[in-house]
Length: 336
Ligand code: KG4
Ligand code: ZN
Image (cartoon, rainbow, N blue to C red; front, side, top):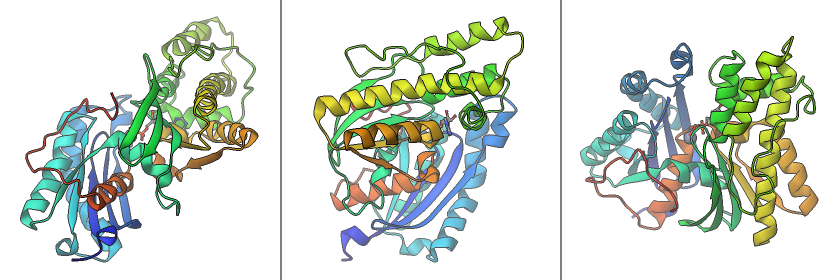
């Protein structure tokens, strides 16, 4: 039998609006293809579940073919099939998991059901020679804002989470208020580069609370109340001041966790970890404390299948296979 650390894994990610397929040989990424549906959903101002699942169905086969081509292998070479089983949109999750299970049955290979959040959580360790290490992890995406203490692979302790909106959701809602195209996050980031971070004093909710939780809905409401009061709206200034408030809280809470646990590594992941100001300020805060910062390249921060394949490779190496009867769970949690 081949060395389990070098087995060929094909991973599928269809939890939201990206149809993604990756192929890994052990820890080596051979292909990572992503067909984004952003343009399709932009006209509705957000993801429409019906439209998403129909397009996963249409795109999955060509995206699998593109990944196999890139990796220079055929389906019969694949030694395990993995797919995101949750959390996410039920009808989208069903497309990816059904395809991966069908392939596992057809080729008589193992199936691995992967938690999307674990994919994000561990993505900063992908390709790192030291592997998965104890760290404070900040997962910030469109659906999640979590502070987690990682002990080792599979051993995670929840420190705190958002009490209302996720950080990415706040970016997207504020983007919508400002009339920016969906998704708001990257557009707010781009405009903020020309703006004044101190122009408006938006609230840093829960920054000083004695815990590791977050709240972003009040901040979004402050932006909503401010806009009608302005004679002229300088988009860059509103974006920069709003973004600074989000980043201050994310960095502040992460550093509070570093202080409390004395862990020397911070790992940030999820779509919002693409944010240029978050990266800049988190790096500065980590440097000031002598803490190492791990961030995945942007293509591995937003939804992708490489991160799903990376978790699958870990599970395979640990002999943690999933039964073909395992179901999707749109509300799947990583830690209680
Ligand atoms: O991880 P992801 O692709 O999907 C989820 O699992 O939710 O994250 C998408 C989120 C969106 O809310 C998007 O606006 C945000 O990540 N995002 C950003 C940036 N790039 C993506 N937010 C702020 N700044 C960015 N540069
Ligand atoms: Zn995601």
